[in-house]
Image (cartoon, rainbow, N blue to C red; front, side, top):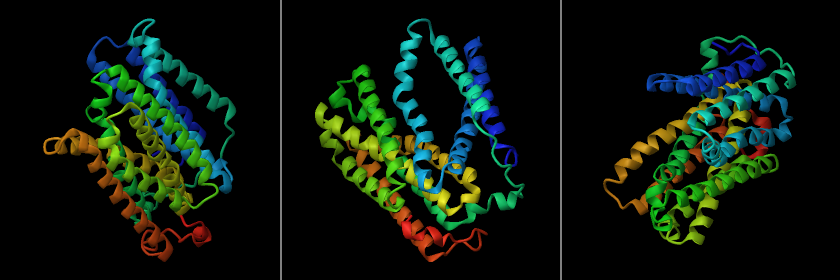
Length: 340
């Protein structure tokens, strides 16, 4: 519906919806209003994220595209790392409503900043629904999206059940667990920025492969490294860097495959990532019925290994040019030497 709207308008509208959702939550007097307002705020955030990534890919020169995407994505990882502790700290001066008002103000500042500082962008062309969905029929894009789904399914399965997986080092203390996850989030932010710079210099395929295989080894060792605070901290650092660092190379690959559909494919990548999170919670819960909780990371490693196979398949299709004509997307051979 909003595909032909100006990008700046969509960003401002998305932030406005986000601000309204949080303000309604802060004023809510019953649980139903809270739930509905959280859906509203989530809708605004979901609309903003892929649009912002698409704008970043348009504004940046091709040789700096990875860095631009990493700056936008760093907002997500930074929020993961710092949002909960900062929100808890602010809530200590009042209540949960105080925290929500703080988030509302931040959203309002961001909305005004976009409105006053972002220059107008070229109006996107009007395309039919069939043309808009063409990237989904591209085998290269489908395999890349499945890579994100399985990779983050593996990464976030352990995150979902971190309290159980890391109980030997935390001793069941929620404060220790929060500190460990804060450490993981900071490492993720560093990994995101680092990989954003690397993807402008090296083929995204190489970065994706290295991140996935280091993660597989790290998760296979986690049942033993999670028994001591130092080794657990090292494992969480590697996990954060490889996990969150994977996002930008994946985004970069998608934009290079279908630059004319960047907002759509980036939105689909967000969907694949969150679908992986949702499925990992269910699948991880089922696995805990059959295996010891401390070995759940090995199941996650298996999912990440599947992601590697899918990623390589996407690369092979990209090299051969198969699966593109039917989707109506030209094969971008000009980018082939980068090995993406």
